[in-house]
Image 1 (cartoon, one colour):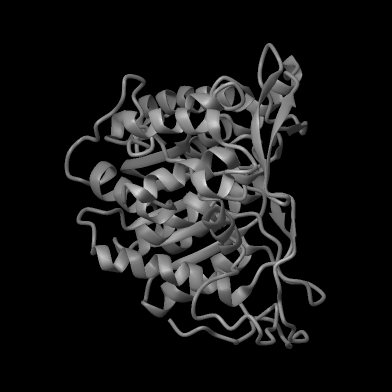
Image 2: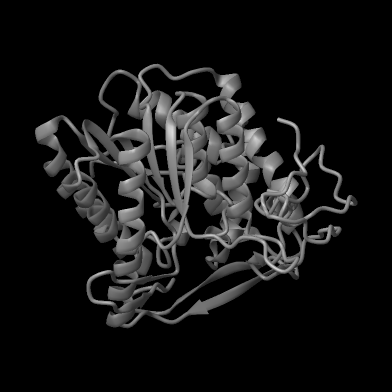
Amino acid sequence: MELSMISNSPSFSPAIVIKPLVRGFICVTSHPLGCQKNVQDQIDYVKRQGPIAGSPQRVLVIGASTGYGLASRIVAAFAGGAGTIGVFFEKPSESGKTATPGWYNSAAFEKAAKQEGLYAVNINGDAFSKEVKARTIDEIKQGLGQVDLVVYSLAAPRRKHPVTGVLHNSVLKPIGQSFTAKTLDTDREVVKEVTIEPASQEEIADTAAVMGGEDWEMWIDQLAEAGVLADGATTVAYSYIGAEVTWPLYKDGTIGVAKIDVERAADRIYEKLASTGGRAFVSVNQAVITQASSAIPVVSLYISLLFKILREKNILEGCIEQMYRLFASRLYSGHAPALDEAGRIRIDDLEMQQDVQNTIKELWNQVSTENLKSMADFDEYRKEFRKLFGFGLPGVDYEMEVDPACL
């Protein structure tokens, strides 16, 4: 796809040279043409792999603008020919400032899909709200009739409960006792120790309210009640377990409690859909560099070590590779997907290979500021992080002035 300078706004805002401005675990600028190239690269990867027989033709992705949600939408559209609706909460360009990368990603996806004659609609708003659910149902009725697949891929810091009106904020904290471990200061390139105090009971409950399975269940219930969930429909939510070195903060922490609630919801949803031949799954995916994961202490160092090991073994996968494999070899392979003892699909199987995890443990004890770049893949980590915001992609002229509203 040719990189476009066509603006969707009534008039062009002043063109500027856009550079990355990184503050901690966030980049406060994003590049529209870089994001477009990043989306196109993922589309090209999917096309090289070829079509997936039996893929769903009408797909709803909740949390569709970045990471696994965006990759799922790309696979559904460009390996299955699906019409898609993507729900997300992103900021457009305003007053000459850049939009969020998810805004540019979604605009680029919609344009690429429509160029190939595929139905594609973006819904920008709070996916937790009654209003966005209602808008989505109306769009399904008008454009798709029903949906065959619902992907739930939200990673939100807070949620206003649609019934109680209470605002819940999620936290990344251990439970029961403080947790001290190595972490990576990505700005200063320093390996240091971080201590995180345990969560209160209120924080645990709030995190489960934001990141747990209640909203997923609400979506499925309302789609079914509105008659827009097809018989035999599949729904999948994404989760993560990770390595033992991260468990006190993640698997055994507040997020872990929320993920257990996601599994509870999966069981409930499966029971509800079974009468029509439907299915509900939790897919445990590999650690990847996303805006959400980069904010988690300890995880940035773990990923830097992991990526070096997986790259050396030639088994490193990003979001798009994993989602293509999830669709092709698990969800739509023609037979029931293999599940672990807890009933989950495991796409993190390469990360969790015993030899990989043994090497992680060895390196974890040895890594320091002095040997970071030789033991870990920090330069690649930084490169992949900036790609999330549209920077560092080949074929993009970053010295060219660009209208921030060009997508």
